[in-house]
Amino acid sequence: MHLELRKIESVSILELSGRFDAYEVGPVVEWINQNMEAFTTRLVINLSGVKFVDSTALATLVQGMKRCRQQQGDLHLCCLQQPVRIIFELTRLDRAIDIFATEREAVETFGD
Amino acid sequence: MLNLKIALITTYPPGNGSLNEYGYHFVRFLRQKTGVAEITLLTDDLPEGQSYPTEETPGLVPLQIIPCWKFESWHNPWRILKVIRHLKPDVVLFNIQFASFGSKKIPASLGLLVPMLAKVSGYPTIVLLHNIMETIDLKNAGFNSNPLMEKLTRLFGTIFTRLLLTTDWVALTIPKYVEIVEKKYHTHNVLLAPHGSFEDSPALSLEAELAQPLQIMAFGKFGTYKKVEQLIEAFRLLQSENRPPLELVIAGTNSPNAPGYLEGLQQKCSEEKNIRFTGYVPEEAVARIFGEAAVVVFPYTSTTGSSGVLHQAGEYGKAVVLPRIGDLAEIISEEGYTGEFFEPGDPSALAEAIAKVLDNPERRREIGTQNYIAARGLPIAEVVDWYLLHFQALLELRDQSANGAALPQPSGQPSGQPSGQPSGQPRVSGITILDFGLGILDCMVAIALNLKSKIKKSKIG
Image 1 (cartoon, chains in turn yellow, brown):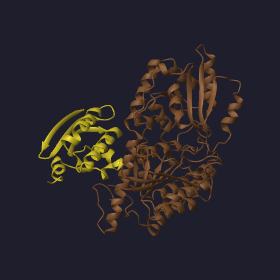
Image 2: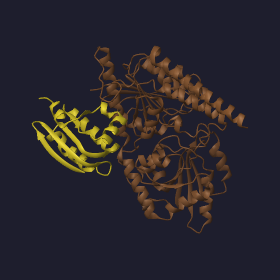
Image 3: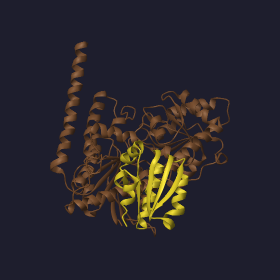
Image 4: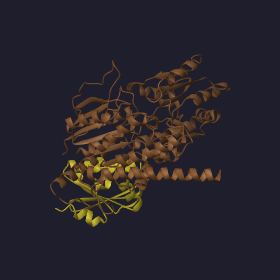
């Protein structure tokens, strides 16, 4: 799992690539634990480089979203590949987490 | 911030109905969640002399337990609905499977009507359905031996699945089940909510902690599709080989559908000192029972859903031995688990599979570690969060609908509201009657096809 962090104004963008599952979830959990509250509560996770997510990865994203929302922020997802989108649809978590087609939309929706 | 009043219809310890353990752990974590104001469990009546726990724990969401239904009773719909209407919860959740309310057709069917009736009464309702009729091997699961009755049972299964689908959401624990139900019933109000592991961060059992002699353990409610005769036979075969002594531990109780089953077997094995029947295993003893076992065996003749016992075995890093039935291998691998498989019906094949695990500590560790990782992947605490998100979405939709706002239409989805109706709105005149109709139509088509094939056969004959 490869993580890359960028920032556009007050929005942090975490770009992930590789497999996002129980075996690879560690670095993302660590990043969320270390950075979420202190560093950012407006987070976009770009999943364009992720071909597979499992339930552990979904749980990590839900936890991230909860923590952002507790701090009056939010977590947006963008650029989901088809297999990843299917998992979100299967769990209907696509109705709980805001998902965008492009990174730009995901960032812009935060507004000011 | 949510401030939810939740009514949960479930079995719960010390009640020994199926899914009681799942109910217990689900509630344990639900009580720790912010956004939940009050939980009321609508449980089954306990036998005389037993009672549900009443003590409150500071810091946890208040829990009220109201026993208001009984296995095999015809009165369950009225009793449960009366309590729901009195409580006026924000949401109603059912933790059930097809035989939760009875093993006989009428009480089982009447109980399965309750989710639809709760929904019709105006309560946002989610059904966590642990099995689906389409994948149950009824004959091997001990429900039907007559082919005609089996077909009839399946037809009623189809009708009642359709009725369950009139609720806001039906949550299933296995991706394949979601696909089957979506495809067969042309519905979109079904979602995947994985089983989840019962412990947050259980400790991996070490080889050094295994009991001596090595234990072969089976855990559950026995007598219907979980039968231990062949396991006992396999154990005898292993004992007759030149190997260190072993112990067989049969942990658990009779299935509610098979009273007296274990007592009968225990009597037959009374001379065999290394076969131990534990009886009911209280929650505090579960960790020890799993921790001491060298291998956990699943002596199933059929599967009826995601296995709670498999998740528990995984939590303690145990190697498992499973039957090669139906799509069990595929299902467990979808959940990240693995095990040693055997051909059901053959005690020597079972003995061989157990021996492969017992005699090879490396293989034992390998299977145990993979199962441990799978179990740790998604604790039930996370799954509970998913349910809360779904509750929240349902209530938001209901509020939007009450305010006259247009329902959101997510791309690629048929409707923002799962069943295309505002949540909380009675649908007696629309969907319910339609679903009844479709169910009856299913029934008639199947009977017609059945008759046609019988006529064809008799002509050929």
